[in-house]
Length: 393
Image 1: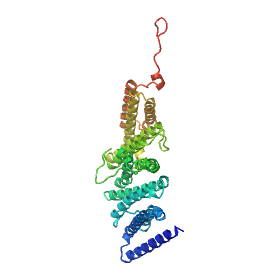
Image 2: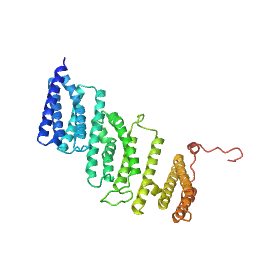
Image 3: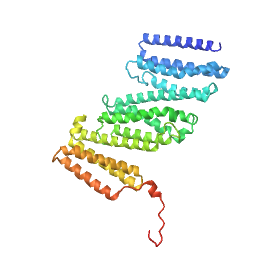
Image 4: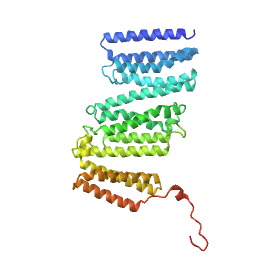
C-alpha cells in the first residue's frame, strides 16, 4: 500500500505533462523540441522527488527515482525513432543543454540513492549510465566531424572512436580512480562497463583498417599522420593502457602473452593498411582487393615492410632475450620468403620483384649476423658448470 500513491501519482503526473507537452509542440510546429521538453520534465520530476524523499524520509519515493535513467534511455530511443533523421543528434533542439544536465543529475542522483539502495544494487545503473552517455557523446562527435568531409569519409569513421578511446584512456587515470564514482565502483567502470567498449574499439580498428581508403578531404593523405591512422593508433594505445590498468585476477585481463600478441598483430595490420593506402593515394592503385593484389608495387612494398618489422622484432628479441618475440619475427620473415616465391615470382623480370628480393635478402643476412636466436630462459638462468678434475671445463 505504501507504493500505491507513489506509482499512481508519478504515473499520472508524467503521462499527463508529457502528453500535453508533445501535443502543444506538435501543434506549434516545434516537434524537434519534444526530446528536450521530455528531458526537462523528467529532470524536474526526479529532482523534486529526490528532494522530498530526503526531507521527509520517504523511502518509497526515493527508490522510485531509480527510474530516472531508464527514462533517459526511453527519451533517447524516442529521439532516434521519432526524429527527422535515423541517427539522432544529441545537441539538436536544445539537446546541448538537456543532455549535459542529465549527465550531471545522473551522477548526483546515484550518489544520493545510496541512502535507499545498497552499493551492489546501484552497480547496473552505473554501468548502464556509462554506456548511454558514452553512446550519445560518440554520436555527437561523429556528427560534428562528419560535417568536415564527405559522407563515409575518414572523418565520420573516426568520430565513432575518439570519444570511447579517450574515455578508456581516462579510466586508468590515477587521479580519477581516487575520486567518486571510480573510487567506489572501480570494478563496475574499469571492468564491466569498459570491456564491451574495448571489444568494440578493437573491432573498429580492424574494420576501418580493412575498408577505409583514408580519404580525409580537405586534408591530403599523409602516411601515419592522417586522421584515420592517428585515431587507430590512439585506440590501440588506449586499449593497451586500459589492459595494463586492470587488476590481477580480473575476468577481462587476458594472459600477457595473448595481449602482447594481439597488440603486435594489430599493429602489423595497421602498418599493412598504411602501405596499401599509400599505394592507393600516391601510385594510383584502385582501392579494391583485386587491384591491390595485382599491383607489383604494392606487393614489393608489403614484402619490404613486413621484412623490416620481422627484423626489428628479431633484434629486439635478441637484445632483450625474449625468445618468443624473436620467434615471431622469424615467422614473419618466413611468411615474407614464401610470399616472394609464390607471389613476386609471377612477375618474371619485373623491377619491383628484383628490388623486393634484394631488400629482403639483405635484411636476412643482417639479422642472421647481428641477432641470432636468444637462449631459452632456463638456459640463460642456469649457473655455469663447475670445472671437472684436472682443470678441464
